[in-house]
Length: 179
Image 1 (cartoon, rainbow, N blue to C red):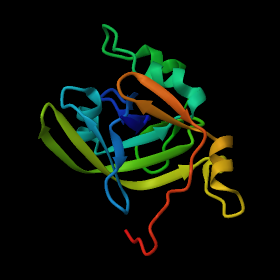
Image 2 (spheres, helix red, strand yellow; image 1 turned 90 degrees about the horizontal axis):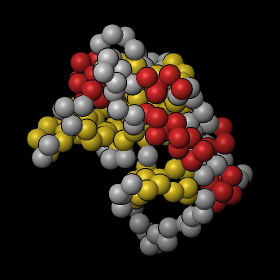
Image 3 (cartoon, rainbow, N blue to C red; image 1 turned 90 degrees about the vertical axis):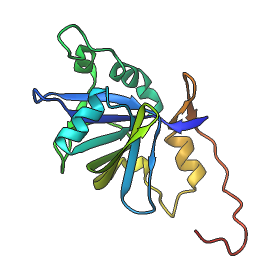
């Protein structure tokens, strides 16, 4: 199964920030909603519910080690000290941080939490701010394949693998197709 590999950021009770990789993450509407799957026993869920917001960063393939650091377990003092090595930037609209140099940043306010999906929950946020790196924005004067080849995307391949997306093809929509 192929999925985007993202890093979700939330604010901890002590005012520090947590980052956690998530691959079960996706747009959940044609408009301004983005969601990710988590479990109520994780700090990401508890923090997002308490604070009412979260951030989403889309790391570049060369940031895979930073993404791995965000998956580090908490130490005896309940902190992820490995996060000190992860460069971040402040969010602009919500109380949070984002992975520096990621190709896409989303800032979200929690809209809905759907619990009891087995042991998991779906946290859905309304996107209140978004920013993309200049080399990752579609440009009518640049072929989409050329842009992707120059700025590859990071994908998670379940279970436990990752890939760079560097080559794509246009989807062959049927004449008259509408969403």
